[in-house]
Structures are given as C-alpha cells and as structure tokens.
Length: 478
Image 1 (spheres, rainbow, N blue to C red):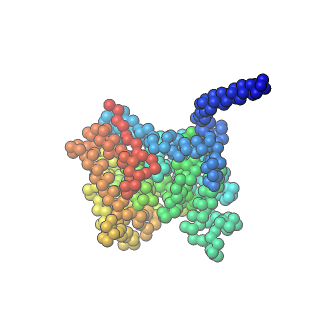
Image 2: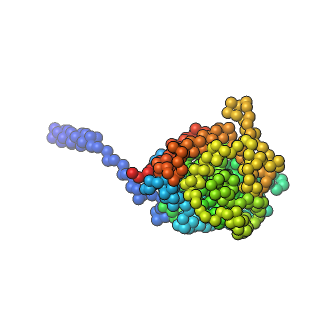
Image 3: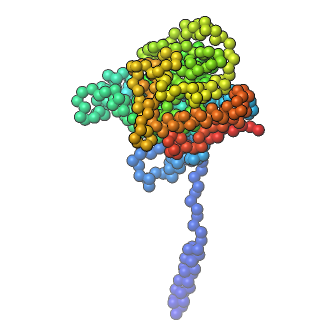
C-alpha cells in the first residue's frame, strides 16, 4: 500500500509539471539585427545561387536578399529622398538642381572602381576584355526610375574575332551555328555569359534584360558587398556597345563649345527620366536621343542669341571610340564669328525654350533632327522613315526622324510607338504650360513651377505601367 501511495504521488507530480510546461509561453524567435543582414564588405554576406531552394536559404541571407531588392538599399516601395530646393527664384533653383545632379569626382571614382572589379570577374571568361564605366549624373543621390534607366553604364570592349573564338571554345554559341555569328547574336551570347559570371560571383544581382533594343544590354545591381559603395548601384551592362562612348564624346565636345550645353542636356535628361519618357525598352527615347534633341535645339531653336552650337558635320565613329576629340576648336571659332560671345540666357530659360520649341514649333512628322546639318529641314532622302501603327491598330502615322550623327542612313527614332509619341507630346505641352504661366520668362517664374515641371510622374510612366520604383517629388523649401 505504501508503494502504491508513492507511485500515485510521483504520477501526480509529473502531471503537474507537464501542465506547467504546456502553459508556459514559447520563446519568440531571435530577431535578426540589421548588422546581421547588412550587405557590407566586412560580414561578406552574398546571394546564394539562383537554383538554391528557398527552404535552404539561411535567415540572414534571406533578409539580406529582401533588403537588396530596393536599388538604393531602402525598404522596397519607398522612394529615395527628393532633392530639396532652397531657393525661390526659378533660375537659382535650376542652378541648385544642376549642382545636385551633375557628375562628381567621387562618383567617377566609384564608377572606375566598379569597372575594375567587374573587369576582374569578366577576364576569367574573356582575358582580353577591357571594361569601361560611364556616369551620366550624380547617381549617389538616387532618382525616380533609377533601375529602369540606370545612371551608370558599364561596357565590355573586346575584338569581335577574339570574342567569337572565346565563346566557341566554351561552347556558348548556338549548336546549329556552323559559321561565325553576326555581331548582334555575338553580343547577346557574350552578355549572357558575362552576366552568369558576375551574378555567380555573389556581388551582382540580375534585374532585367533588353535584348530587343538596337544594342542589347542587361540591368544589374552592384550590391554593397562589392565594397565600392554603401548602397546598391543600378548599372546598364553591355558588350561592345558604342552608344555610351558616343554620348560621352558629344557631351564633352558640345560642352567645350558652349558650357551651357551640358547644363541643358542634364536638365532635359533628368526631366525625361523623372517623367517616365526615357525608357527605350517601352518605346520612349533613350538618354542618347534626348541628348541629340537638346543639341539640335541649341543649333536651330535658341532664338534669343542665335545658334549656340554649330553643325557637327559627319562624325567618325572610330575616332570617337579611340577617344580623340572632334575639331571643337575650329567650331568654337566659327561660333565667335557668328557673334555668340556673351552669355545672356540662363540654363533655366534655355530649358523653357527647349520645351516650347518641341511642344509648339517643331514638326514631328515633317522635320528631321540632324545635328550633322544643324538646320531645320525635312528628313534627308537617305534616312528611312518610321511608320508607326496607331493605338487603334488600324491607322498609321510617321514617327520622329532622328538621324544618327555617326550613320546618316540610320533613323534612331525607329523604336517609338504611338503611345510613346502621345506621351511625349503630352509631357512637352504640360511642362511648357507650367513654366509659361502668365507669360513671364523663366527668370520671373517661381521655383514651385520649376519643381512641378521637373517633378516625377507619380510612379507611372511608359504606357501606364507601374515602374519598379515610385517617383519622388521635388520639394521646395518655404
């Protein structure tokens, strides 16, 4: 009986202990600290392989992956802080904005380091390759549509013959291709191979491809784990693309002849990008085309001072790729003979006149943009016209004719659609009306009008589809 009583006491005590354990709260999972999931060079956290199952991804790596989805290292869906314009006068506010978006020496150094790191990876596949980097503005501040239209362009340059041989050795060409591939297919194959290498290195993330464009390219994110910048950098990556070098050469030469040309080009490209009409993959004009439109306006449309830039003539692509400047000195002397020696029009007023010129004066169907000729005229007979199918699917219209300064038989406007052309006219008219106001010049306008004209398109652009990053709003200090 004594043994039975002790057994009952022991069983009762076990039941009470079990009940207490069942009723106690389960300890919460340990929260991952920011230091654990930050993508820095010190902790070395990278991205797992694309084929890694989600269940096999460590919690800290998964948190780091979620954070890096925002191109500027912030919470996805939250735009970067907009530029704060402290000055009230429009001309002063535009000058302040230019100081915020102009390329800086710090940004150039970051781009050079980025190109060097990418070259180290790419040379594991293509030992003869050289990697060049270009920054079109101050990318460290962040902008609306920063991933759709990156401010940083990275180009791999290599001989086509050497490239074809290297790809053939690694069995990266199409199996059915017996002979040499054409340049376009060769570019695509090289971009895919280099992208696999870069993403596999763990410091880059693939975002999108644009292989239907004239020059195929992909958009990558250079992650902070690379160690060149504390924020992710959206970059446009291509192989043997000539557009970035041509655009940089035009900007350099035109800035030498007319310093205000660089300011206007920066303003135009920033406005087009923030308004969602600068994404070439959706049929809009690329930053290179907006550069040509700004140059052409300075050649024919600046009515107050006369031509601010001369005709550029026939440009040699090989000379540009070799880094040799055009005959800018002779063209500058030509401008002086025309009497253009004093600067009287501010960049703000030039931007306003640019908008009015293309909104009210330029004939999109009957005129051709030719910086080679530098005069208003119909498209040259050798330039093919671009016929655009209307939005109703039945009617047609003639698109904008933009002559390639390096190839007079190439129409750079052949990627426009009816929707993109409609959006182009709407945005030009909207901005011109905002800056016009009561008819006073841009110097007499308020900074609020400038902010509204240059302000982003509220998260929408390019045919009504929502962009990856919502647009910021330019603020004006009271």
